[in-house]
Amino acid sequence: MAPRRVRFAAMVATLIGVGLLSQIPSSAQPVTSPHLEFGQPGGDCTLLDKRVFVVCYDEDRRIPAWVAYRLKASDLTGAVDRTDDFRADEALDDEARSEPRDYEHSGYDQGHMAPAEDFTRSERAMSTTFLLSNMTPQRPALNRGKWKALEGQIRKLAGEVQAVWIITGSLFTTPRPAHHRQTIGRGRVAVPTDFFKVILARDSDGEFTTYGFIMPNSMNPLKGKAADFEQTVNEAERLSGLNFFDALDDAMEERLESALEEWPF
Image (cartoon, rainbow, N blue to C red; front, side, top):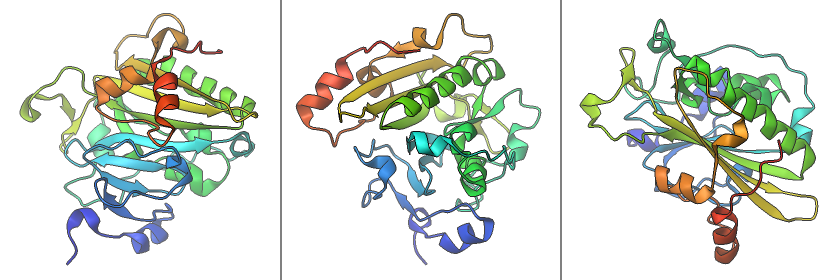
């Protein structure tokens, strides 16, 4: 029998219509995907290629460490409504995945890392975003506030440039031993202290710009604008331990990721 973390689940995925390609550890052969065109960030996780996005899933914490996808203006022309079919990801073993019951009465939203509104292109794409492997416990004040505002602004950006590559993930900026970390549900789903988004935008002239954002998982509405939470991509790398967009030329990568570009919204 193949090791748990390298088991393929294409048959199951076909049956439940989630479009899974494979499940492999992130240290193995990198996933070939347009969503990771400019590099695979790394991380100790199981990679799940969902076709419309790629998940780096932390089985210990039962949440995604990061989710990556490419977004173009043409992806945003669909009119598919939210499916709201929140469900466990059957590609993961029972002891590694979160379940809808973990979120019940927890006070936390099932927070999308790849937001549903970015996937109105088809019902399959929309439904895939409601897998819990794309979810983390988010405070409602964040999920329905500044975080939602930022997601909408990124869609506007995608409509104005050639393409954007977005990586969203969880941060634990107050390190705790596993037995002391904040969790919800019987599955002990870990609650991140903060979330990041990093964006690589390519304009019609082929020029690149990067943006980074870090927002606390706050129980109170965040003050100010989404732009007030902008950080360099380098800072997101420092806090997450990941390496974003490393397929870029080294000099270009350093120049882009150390710059704090003005967020246009």
